[in-house]
Image (cartoon, rainbow, N blue to C red; front, side, top):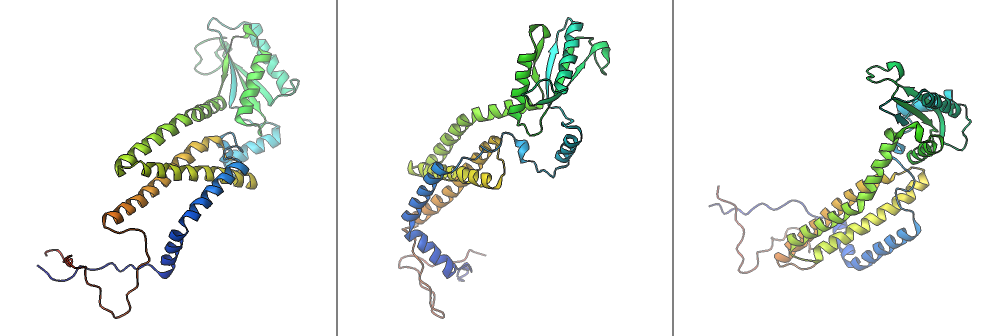
Length: 316
């Protein structure tokens, strides 16, 4: 067996880190109260994140080629050339000619601006009459009226305008199936996400509580982890909402679940790291943090305490 001592770590904390740690520990209760006060003030005086936007499309840069193309089409033609919402009429037994004629007349009235107080700028009806559409298996059974809305209208406003248009301009004889397109799908998706968020957050909180409680065999550890995560989430949401309003950056509500999940995961991980460090120090018989005394240059290394053998290198 070798009698050479085990090599020591060369890393030594600087005076700056030592004094920083000592100040933080000394002011620990003041720091905790300051964070609680800051969170309470943010919740009272600052807006919450996710109130400045209604859809994820608002996060796309205005320099995006697709966005620039739609802006140019609006500047040249007065409306975007891409329809994302449509009204579907269908009767398997065939739509009467009068119903198809009304669809054309209705779309013409919209395009000529005869229907005021609406976000719909134009409408184009497309029918499968005479099987003019490639792949059409039926004849005169369906009319899809594509709606073109104002570019500054949000997804919710576009859907509301289309539903209002369908309710006011169509009757039971028009065989309206409903409103479809990517815009209604996005609005429905956002509603599902926001309605499911409370349940998802509750399940996540319960899972974190159980896992941390079992890992540390304590009820204080999970309460501490969830409390710190809750403070971080509330502070981030409200401070982020204030910054978004000041800089004019819309933040859709659909981003809130992602932000909550990220903050809950990151903050919980760091709390678990610190609690693991505390448990290790307590198991080693050490109490609170103290600034280690520096060994004068040239002085011999301290001997191990009586009764504790000097560590030896492993057998080679």
